[in-house]
Every structure is written in structure tokens, then in C-alpha cells.
Length: 247
Image (cartoon, rainbow, N blue to C red; front, side, top):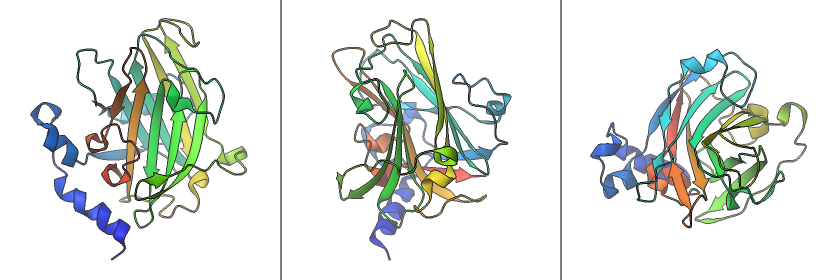
């Protein structure tokens, strides 16, 4: 059996219906969340999730990794069409920290939402997407050799291979250092951009390993959120990504 397939199968024994309030530290480490992803017609990306198509999807809870009373919660929705994946993330926030204001830069040094997509579990190669409140993006293909990894930027990133993305800020200006009440990111990742990963595009009944994360820099301590709690703040722990089941 392929070693990466074995890595993928072992954590599935820990998949359960446990709720966050019922979990201790060990529960969270071993818990692999599962989400059923609805199919949709293609629709316009607005940055605020105003399309009625989003009513089909349910909100997904992201876990705050660090302890403390300052929650600043984040939630996300995901759907798919015949052409690609739709994501919507809503982040409660107090201040925008965006020191990098350019595409393909080190966005993770500021506030960011991150998505990890691992369609083919027989190979330790996955897709990573980051988006900041200023609507800057970072697009990477990541080979991961037992924790040693580095990202590769896309080639011919244009036309139908380009991600459609928009963000909206509430309660303040859309600029670095602004005091706000929150921000929203909405984006569409075309399947054609994932060509070569294997198991793409998904069919009804397909399962992909995936994760959705957030980093925020409001205070002295960096705060992390993750949909799959087993990754903690080590977002590249791909063996502990959650499971997306395509309806």
C-alpha cells in the first residue's frame, strides 16, 4: 500500500460526531472533521457572500488554537460547481494587520485566511491559497516531504486558470492598521488550476482532504484558527486535514 494512502487511512478511525464543548486536548488532536459539500450553479463573486446560492451551504466552525477570552470568531462556507470550488469566510476582527500589500507576497505575516486542498492522498502534494483583507492573494502548489516543504507559484496564471477573489471590510477602512469590526473573503478556485494533482475534478461521492485556516495579528500574540483541530497552528500537517465529501 502507498505510504501516503496509509497515512490518510489511519486518522479516519478518529472521525466522530463530537462537539467542541465535549472535546479535551487529545480529542481535538485525533478528530478529523467531515463536511458534505453542496453542488451549485456558477454565480458572481461579490466579496460579501450576497448570492442566494450560499443559502444552500451550512456554516463550518473554525477552532481557535490559542486559549483566551478574545475569540474573534471565524466561520466558512464551501460549495462546488462543475468548474470549481466556491469559498466564503467571515472573520470578526478589531484591527487590520496587512504589512504586505502585493500578490504572491508573504501574506501570512499579516491577517489572512488560508485554504489547503489535497485531492489525491497517494501523493504528498497539495494546493494552498491565502487571501488578505486587502484582497491580495498567494497561490502555491506544495510538495511536502515528511515536514520539509516549499511552495511553487503557478505557471500561466491567467484566463480560466485564475482564481476569482474579492474581500469586503466592515466597520472601517480597507487599509493596513484600520480599526474595523470584521472582514469577509469570497473566492472561486477553478478545477483547471489544480490539473495534475489527481482526482480532479471531483465527482458526486468523491472525497478530498482539505482545511480552512485563519491567522490574525491584533494583539501581541498571533492567533490561529483551523477547521481541522488536529493541525493546531501547524497548518501544513496535511495528514490531519479534514474531509470534504462532494454530494
